[in-house]
Length: 289
Ligand code: FVH
Image (cartoon, rainbow, N blue to C red; front, side, top):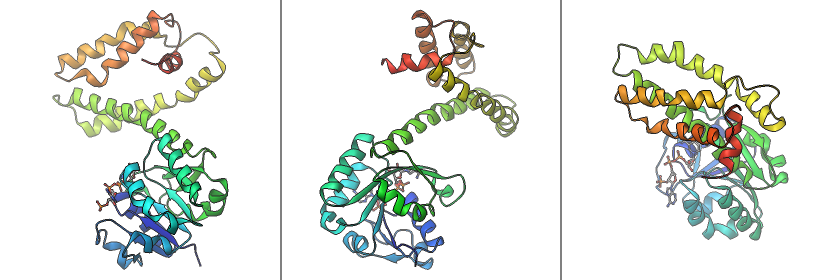
């Protein structure tokens, strides 16, 4: 028999996780604060527990996916005794410090603990693009990785329970400005006779894909130092960037999304990095505001 799994929380993500475990043949017990949510899981074979404690008692592997860290603490703290001897996998978004504190709480109650960062939206769960970053108990990961695979490809990023969250939020920090930049680009053309779909398919995706292809070189420069003169030096970029802000103003678009980049480039130049490449921004940012 496959490992029984308990899922606490049937929001959009908890429901997707429960569906994936059911699809992979895991006996799956579910609980949600508001009863009756995600009724479709019943027909797939989910067992609906009357209380969180009853859900926890159903099996050795407890996956929690609630709104935020304070919700998790409020839900789990009364269940400490029920969780003892089981493995708790927290897939709720939380800060590294919160994950570490939860791990400490779990250890104090004899609960094996993994924190996870879900790199997917609900519709991708169970599919090939989804992956989930895990950190915390190596033993728990080794024991349950093959079960957790039902939800998404599991990637273990370290014993420190804060590592999954650090990786997760770092990846989101790269994603949001990219998607915000895409929204800014589409706003620039929105008053024009240009199809957003065609523009995106023909130019935006190929352009961003080509630029993404440059990231490994940037990371290499950062790790080993530049291996030649900058192809696109920061002085040149800082000099021209105001035109992007001017274009936004001309098109009636709020430049809020791109304006901080101009300031950052100017700062890099004024601090002597004009002849360097974008990798020079990394230590600059690390130095703080
Ligand atoms: N959905 C997504 O795209 C992202 C992908 C990456 C990871 N996130 C994180 O996953 C956590 C849950 O997100 P979600 O999408 O499932 O969120 P909701 O659909 O809003 O469901 C929230 C669940 O939390 C329950 N809940 C809220 N407050 C309480 C409380 N005080 N006590 C107990 N449970 C609570 C809520 O229950 P109910 O409102 O139905 O009673 C839902 O089960 C989240 O950390 C994302 O950042 C998702």
